[in-house]
Each structure stands twice: as C-alpha cells, then as structure tokens.
Amino acid sequence: MKFKSLLSLAVAAMLIPAMPLMAHSKTYNMAVGDPEDSEQGYAATAFKKYVEEKTNGQTKIEVFFGSALGDESESFRNVQKGTLPFAVGGIANLVPFEKRLGLMTLPYLWKDLDEVVAGTTGKPAELLNSYAIKAGFRILTFTYCDFRFITNSRKPITKMADMKGLKFRVPQSAVLIASYKAFGGSPTPISWSETFTALQQGVVDGQCYGYIGFQAMKFLEANQKYLTEVHYTYQIQPIVVSERVFRKMSPEEQALMIEAGKYAQDQVLQYQKNDGTKAKEALIAAGLTVSTLEDEDQWMKAAYEKVWPEMADFVGGKEAINEYLRALGKPEWNN
Image (cartoon, rainbow, N blue to C red):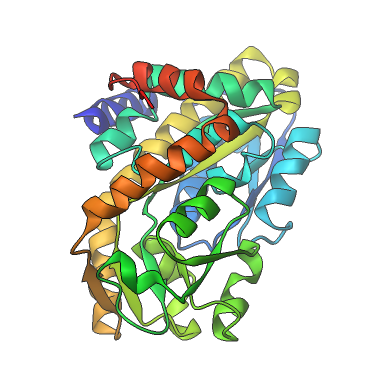
C-alpha cells in the first residue's frame, strides 16, 4: 500500500548522517493551529526533531501550538508574505490563497485512507504543490487528521433528515458551506480559535473533526455529546514553508526541509492509524455517543449532483478537477 512506501522513504531518510549545514545557528518559527497533542502537533514535533537532529542543533524549529501566533488564516497570510517561515493548518484555510487547493475539500473525493495517501503522495502531491508554490507556499507535509466526522450537542445523526435545524461551525470554506447546505444543515463560518467557545455557549450546535483532534480540543467539555462517522471529506492539514524563505536557503538546507517534511508525513500517518482508534475508545468511555449513517449513499448523491457542479469553478474548474483525478488514476468527472 502507498503508506508503506512512505515508511520506506522515511527510514532511508533517517540513515542520512547528521552534518552541519551552516556556520552559524539559525532558528525558524512555526505556527500550529491545534494543541500539541493533536495530529498537527505530532507532525510539527516530528519535523522539528528531524531538523534539529540532522543539524546537531544548528538549525532550530521553534513551534508555537494552539494558534499562539494567530489563527490559521493569519498564519498562512504571514507565511505567504515571508514574515513567518512555517505554519501548519487546515487545507481549507489555504484555499483563499490558491483556489485549486480547494479541490481537496470536495465531498467524497476520497473513499478511504488508502486513497487519501495516494492522493497526497507521488504525482498528485507534486501537482498540488505546484499550485501552492505559485501562491507563495511550499507544502512539505500533508498531515493526516481523519475524516471530518460530524458532532453536535442535541441528538444522534443517523440519516440526512437529522441534519435539519442544526447549526454547524465550519471553516471559511465555500465548499464545506455548500456541502452542509446540501446535507440539510445550517453552516456558520467561525474561526478555529473561537470554535470551542462558540460550541460551549451554544452559538452553534456542532462541528466536524476526527477523533484525535476532537479529544485534543476537549470538545466533550463544549457539549459535543454525539458524533456521526460520515466520510464526506478527509481533513488534510499541511505543513507549509514560505516560498520566499525557502528560496533564501542553501540547496543543502532546502533538501533537509523536504526530507524532514517526508519524515513528518510518515510519522503522522502512523500516529493517525495507531492512535485514532485509541482516541475513539477513550471518548466513548468518557460519554461520547458514536453513530453511523443509514443512508450515506444519499449523502454521496447530494455531493455529486449538487456540490460538485456548484463548486467546480470555485476550485479551479472542471479541468483542474480532472487533472487531479488523472494524476490519482481515477476516472474523470463528467458532469
């Protein structure tokens, strides 16, 4: 499977001997939207460890967790300007800078984790990165954060009709907003740093996240009693470096950052596979009610018949979608 080749690549990278890349020490800041004990935090820590070990501490990565340097949109904006070297955040928050990256948010683009990994390595990853670079970013790591399971404070959701009357926090993503409307819910864009309070105060009824992130954000304490395993979109949260900063690095340092990104991507994939189930079990034991859908085929139908046609131009057009599908080895979309 695809993730095995990732593991082999990371192991090979670990065999590269540590060597000084510069005469003087250097420190780069990295902004992370989520807490340290999240997938974002795990990927950032792995990246930091790799860089510092390979340079014998000459290059340091200073990581700021929990949106300490501003929310994810602000951090990405600073990365684009070159005033912040690195950031980790949700792919939806990169879309305002390069709309073609929004195709990764199309509902039911990927059916399972194997397809997600295939879609974020090799030719598909190169294609996505070419879009990002033109916008001033370079994707070093695709952080795997599980499917965006739907949670809420009011009732179990087992069919699309249960979405009616519920208000959900979503990121500032036109695709996710359109998706929730197609599924019958009421989406409300709220910044990630304000989400916990909005849930706790009842401004919205629910949100969407995977088990590890849900646990790290302590959403049970924000009245999120019910979770539904719906597979409409997989949460990808890249580590990006400012292209302006990257171009100023020596070739050796650039190579180091790319290898560190590959290592972090493999590490967070294994973390997701191993710890996602543990987080689920712990949350159920703490009182979370988990449901599955009786009619997910109807959700898929709504996605393909309503959301994809409506959002195609927003994510770069039909040709951009099909260019990605071809790179992934999937049939083209013929609307």
